[in-house]
Structures are given as C-alpha cells and as structure tokens.
Length: 616
Image (cartoon, rainbow, N blue to C red; front, side, top):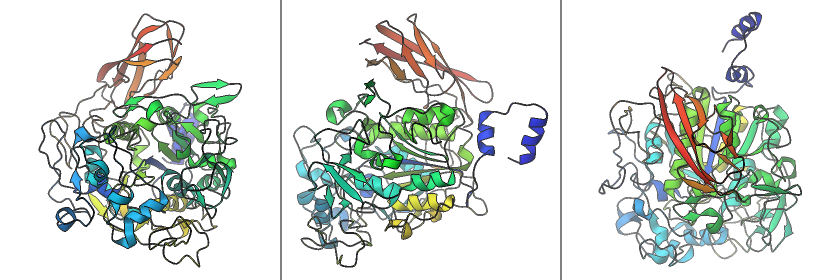
C-alpha cells in the first residue's frame, strides 16, 4: 500500500478501514512477511504424525482419505527394517482414527535420554512407554509408545504439508517436557530458574529447567498450588519486540478468568473433548506451565487482566501482551493482528495425549488457519506449526547433540552423561532432543516441499529476530546457533503465490465439493456458515461463539453478523466478528444464536449455535 494513497484519502476526508490503517503502520521487515503466527501445539514426535507420509492406508470407509500428488517428496520416516525388524521391544504400528485417545507417555528429560540409548533409539518401550487400563486403546500396554497415525487421522496436517512446506529434520532444543520446550521457543534458554516452591528434583538441574515446574504464584494467579514453582531471569523475545515497538502477544485458551475473587483470577473455563472434560483430565482449558512468558516478571500478566480494548491488543497495556485465544480472533476480525502472535490451544484441543487427541487438535488448527487465510492479513503472513515436546512417542532419528551436559538427570551416553559437558556454559540443557513436526503455511511457503535442513524450536525465535532486526538474546541462548527457516520459504521470483487452502475442520480435507491444485477432493467451492457450539451446556454468564470454521467460495474474507435466535434475553458483543461474546442476562434455558456470513459476491449462508445456560 503506497503512502500516496493515504495522503489522497485523508485530503478527501475519507475514513479508512481499520485494517488499512494497521497495514500503513507495519514496521519494516527483512522479508515480505509482516505477520508471524506461531501455533505451538503439544507432545508429538515427527514419526508419530508423519511416519509414512505421504502414503496413507485408506482402508476404512469411516476415515477421511488422503491421496498424495504424484510429485510429493518423501520424508525421513518409517520404512523397510524400521517397520519389519525394529530393534525396540515392539515394532512401530499404525493407530486408527478410532484410536485417537491414548495414554500420555513418559516425556521426562532423563527418561527420554534413556530411550535414545546412546543413539541406538531402541529403549522406548522400557523407558518412556506408558499403558493403563483407563486409556489403553488396543491392549498395547507400554508398547503403545511405538504407535503412529497417518493421513487418515491427521488429515489436515498432511494436507498442509502437501500444499505448503514441512521439515523432517527439526528438533526440540533440549530433551524434556512442555516447560523447557516453551522456554526454548521464546528465549532459547532454559537456564536462569530460581526455585520458589516444591522440590527441584526432576524440575530444575544446575539452574536449568528440565521438568514442568509452574510459574511462581506471584506471576500467575492460576498456577497450581502444591506444585513446584519457579521464576525465570534473563530476557525473552518479548523484551526484544518491546524494545523495537513491535506489536506481539501470547494467546492461550482458558487464559481469560472464569471469575475474579478479590482481584485474584480463577481460570475455571473448561471444555469436553474426545478424551473427556479437561477440568477432570487436566487443570481445565488453561495450563500454566504451557505459558512461557508467565515465568518472567517483565512479561507476566499475573491477574490475567484483559486488554483495555481490541485495538490495544499487541501493544503494552494492562494485559502486558498475555491474552486469551478469543482475543486473537477479536483482533483478527477487527483488523488489528499483532506482528508476532503465539497461539496455544485450550487444553482439550492442544493435541497432548491423555487429555486431548489429534481430532480435537485438528479442529483448532483448521478453524484458526481458515480464519487467518480469509483475513486481509493472509497475503503477508507466515503461520508456523510446531510442538513443545515429543510426549515420548517413538521417533527413529537422533539429532545432532549441540549442547552437552553432565548432571544427575543426564543419561544419553551413560549415567550422568550427555556427552562431555565440561565446557558447557550451562548444564542441564542436553540437546537437541526428539524430532518434532514443523510446518510453514504462507503464500511465501514453498509448495509441497520437505526441508531437510537442521532446525530446532529456537529457529522460530531466530526467524522473528532476523525478520524484524531484533538482534540476539545472548547469555547462551541457542538463537545464536539455530538453523534458519529460510529454506522453507520462497522470497525470490514467484514467491508469494502459494494459494490458501480452506479445509473442513472435521475431516481435515477440503469441504465437500471443492478443488485444489494439491491433494484433496474435487468439485465446486461454496460459501458455508458454521456456527459453534452445538448444544453445549455452560454455567458462566458469558461465552464466546465461534464462526471461524465458515468458508467462502473464493477464499476471500467473509463478513459476519450474529443475531439472537431465541426469545430469552442476551447481549452480543462484537456481533460483526467471527468470535463474538454473549452475555446471558438472568434466565436459565436454551439460547440460539444465528450466524449469517456474506462473501465478496454478496452470497450469504446461515447456521445456528445453541447453548444451554444453567445460570449458576
């Protein structure tokens, strides 16, 4: 958008749409990418989701099918002796879509290293396999750790890989569970922890985070009492972005309080997925140790206060850049997408075995990506999908060990040993850890491309630093050695032309009757309204409706209009966005809300969301 356009418009007294004003203020970048959206999911190894890519079994009529394009590149997956003569205590095996809900595996820093067994990769069943009668989907017991899904279950991810870019050589920066992965994403450094409650054993080793200690209670009202707690020193990417005046935010499901008691936030919002109610299977929608910025005093939002307005999202105000996922969709609809946005799904949709699953995860991924693709920001946005850890799931490939360590928690090359850590700046950071999925979805992503360059979680940090000229964090951050993501993009001739891919959140394939140049089903595109939830029961007086799964025939942005369908009184805030908030006035009963979407040609479609309000 040229400056002269705005000068002429202002001279004529024209009121510009908000999204045009936002684009006019976009800071300079070193690439055409003006917005990075990082969708940081939970607990999946590369082989667990992509072992046989691009070949799906396609043998059950009850499962979505996936058929790859003839020119699809291969990945470093499972084939030959890795399937038929694997040296683990059980061979790898395919899990069906009906087996989406499984046990959570052991993904401790020390046990993952034991599973790697000096790089032989043959002790997964004994070291990290977990089986239980309450979650054993097929009588596999601890052998379940060798299971993998294909494109008949993780269909959307395979379609994104088919049409955009994927790495088959990207790793966790270190071994260990969620908190180290989250800290590495935003700082490239797990060192600097100060224990404030509980035992350091299995949580902190030599000042480095190796487990899942929660943020200190002074930094997060919704941290979990009775758990080990820490604070983190040093800087993170938020400090660098603030110093440059770049808008940014972390958006996490359940961050918005369900109640506030004497100024203290209560995070009780929860949902039911295939694995059950996440208030029962885990700590509700919001999981504190998945929120890395809450560990640092300078970037925490201890009381979970909301932004002062939708237009303030991404700037420094009372929310301090920490938000609920509903704030992301409100900002997107209002034309106020921050330059850098990190998204963490509510627990039941984050993909973590035990309380989530790949099908509920797919719903979150597709509805989010559809909304971005149908917004004005798609043309210069890069969506990066990555994972915090492997959950312990089998993966056959060891990565380079760039950070060695000798603590009582290290076992990669022997008891107390991850190589020779004598010269390491910090101990307790053995890595690279397990191989993880990494996908780039953007008009500038190479299409149907597999990158074999070595990258890790802090490669995302490096891309953000480089794109906005932020500099490095220093203090031993792995941003200094992280492999770049640039090979997943085409910033040269022909770049910026990879087409959007609007998928069905349920099947992970194209909506019935649509076509694409990549894999998928055929037919003619239609404009469809999808209003959620469907017949959910709630106790809170407010609730966020969701129309982000709606699709337009031409892939261009839709306009949204929500109206009250029932006779019971309710208020609708942001009724012209995809994710309005409704407030129930006083009456218990069943409420219906009608969504009408209009595409760029004027065609409309409607759907209805239904909520049963208990009125407690």
